[in-house]
Length: 360
Picture (cartoon, helix red, strand yellow):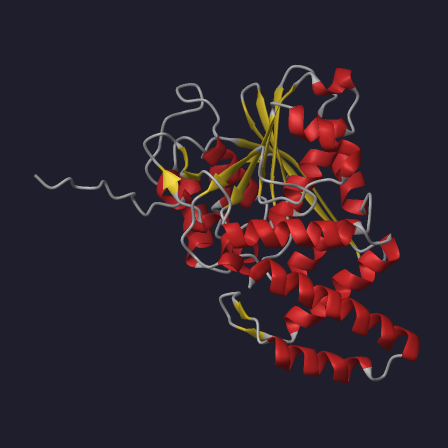
């Protein structure tokens, strides 16, 4: 008799939002809920005149176009909004506060929002836009510490924690997860008491100053895709939940492409990272840590100029045509001084070596 292998359903976060209706009293907060709240933080809440409302109130024809317009890049995001507004689990969750700061002088883009259900508060920090410039902001953390957004994130959390009657949960995707980590780990022990869990999704880590706290702290729950790059900056996969995804590597940074186990209300997990990306992450981390802060900044800028020169598709995927990219990069650097050109040549050679040894 043939053994029929059970097929893993091709479900994503939206399938959870449109099928699971139990209240938080009946089913406690889980990782899929926090992934949803971290994604909801990307929308333009500033168009609403009041900061206290419910999720179902977001569906307001007067504001909905501006609320969705600049932020909805795919059908997944539009569907998420529609499901959330009508889902009994989420529609009556309160929005109690949000803060939006954009400072071009400080290079700061900060947004945080608090969702409340009875005595539970979920603080979601917004990440970066899902494009090459957004990824660069994540990599900037390798030479800027603390960045302005981290300081703002800590101040926001401290203000929320003044009330001791709530249980707090922190969450964030990409840079947002990093802000949640930084904010929590910079609290006094007495302030940490009411924070129950931190959920981060493909978020960059923090350099050595917090290494022991991150690895031993059981309330910090880190989720990364199997081909993670952003989530492995200053980190490894030893204490992470590695989530299954079948799309190609750059698209895996988007949570909607992570496979969801609807029966157990969690993501499907893999045992290990993709071997090629684990190798690349280790080599890139070793390379960047060995550099001075000034050289890290130069290397990150050079890396992203290299990426921007390669073929880029609308879906965010890139084709690493290194020969063409290097030629265009050399033309761009012809206007620089000999000292800068020499430094660029040296670092470009080093970066290509990291890419070749790591990914090829």
